[in-house]
Length: 201
Image (cartoon, rainbow, N blue to C red):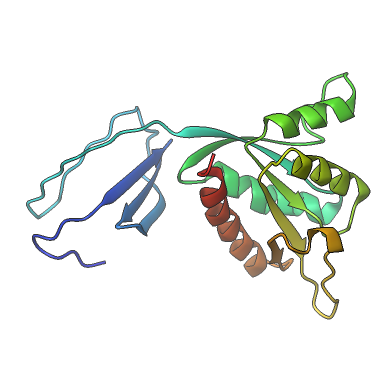
């Protein structure tokens, strides 16, 4: 991106651990650039070869956002969770996500009570509805009744008709392909969608 002399720009700089993301007028020009050492909380502004003036500086801490993941516990969905959903949440440039999947960190109490508590306190949910799993739809239905914001995912299989249950056909559902390229694409999509829906809280 080439900057124009004497033009004013709105710059947003995000530093999370040792990862730097920069937006100029809403356009992301640097994403999760690793600069070696973890941030100590200090941010400096400057330029390398030009004369630059900064003003109206607004510094804010990251927002911590609770996310509950609803999905079947099968081998393919485990891979999606480990290689797509977790990286999208861990490396998100704007939010720090405190996330759980139903099979994680369960205590000796009733599972159903813990799941409803996760849903009640979540800012956003991610639900994979690929296999029309009964537990997934029970939890998703409860979440919708509680007016929780949800990001829906469904696997698109070549040669197989994509079928979305009637009751949720009017909800936006994001498809993904089970491949390296498909994972990269849906990971970026999840990050982008979460920026929008989590930012509405």
